[in-house]
Length: 254
Length: 244
Image 1: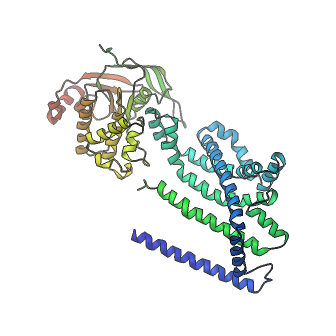
Image 2: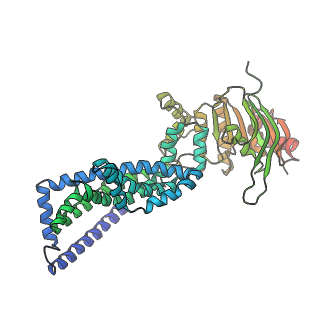
Image 3: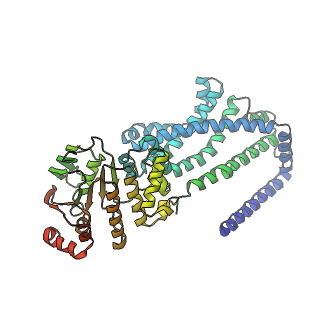
């Protein structure tokens, strides 16, 4: 335990050092640039505090986060179901593998634009667009998990007739946990970036909307302030939710 | 009065399809076996002959055969299956593993805890299986099989790769459990001592397709089964030729 703690705090120190170096480099570069086009950390920090004080920062980040969450959950559920089905049933895999490749390579922008055209400029279209972008990634990852399911344990579940719900909950999902984690990690990074594009193109709230408004007037300080704030939020999700959850899931490992 | 046949196996034909250049293998051809209620049948035969396949057919895991397996005692019997490996869920504790096939009731919980106590492994209830020795894991698998109060208990070399002392302790445990909760047992092994020590009937299997070459009643008392010399004598009398 002590050793772990020492290792953890050492890593934290390195991370802090690394961030300080980045800020210093940023400050140095800003000193040689047009402060309007490339503001330094001080200016961006002040903008951040200002946006935080008048509440706009939290409102927009909250809205974006809600969209991230909604589309993320949607994509995880549908992608997992598709992935398990493809991983378990060879016929389905053969039939739908080309579809998966098509959707994997479809540019996010095309999906977003088509969703807005077909479903209208509304919230449902925005969330659907993001989910469709993420579903193929989840499906591909979970398909590997579906293929790797332990046959011995599935047989045990069948003989003891524990039913589909217990089989899913106690036999299948725990085996998929590492694949789930991989999909969540890569998903979170991907989804929030796509949500920003969706907001930029067709929503009048959220971080993407703020950035598009700031773009109109070349307000680089606001763009950077919001981007940084959101990066911090995503990192907090990683530290406060994902890592403890992963530790919990891995308790049983020797 | 209970019917005289609990389990009736009539396999007209069972074969493994040819895979990767290996020829198709006929495992069973006109194979018949009737098991009486409460019998402890040991299927004795060399590895790879099709004993596990037979258990899988009885349990319903393998339905790809021609023929019929009928249960006369209960039409839809509860089947406890102790596999060759413990097949416990590594991400669930010992107690959760035993509760897995049981309804979520307080009675079921009491049953599970009672079984753990009866097998002398109460202290492992909150431990994850992979932290236990193989002998302990096999005990848990045995407890899970008894938890459902099985009509038929299928056992596939459940004491293999254990040291002799541990295996002996588990054999005694099994006999003790069966005395309290009687069940019809089909026990697969390649170890004739295993068979003589526990079985009421030994079926010696051989050949391909599998044939019953011997069907022996074992009328030894509990005391005689503990005695190494008696076991060896029984072995010499009935099983010597088929077990070189």
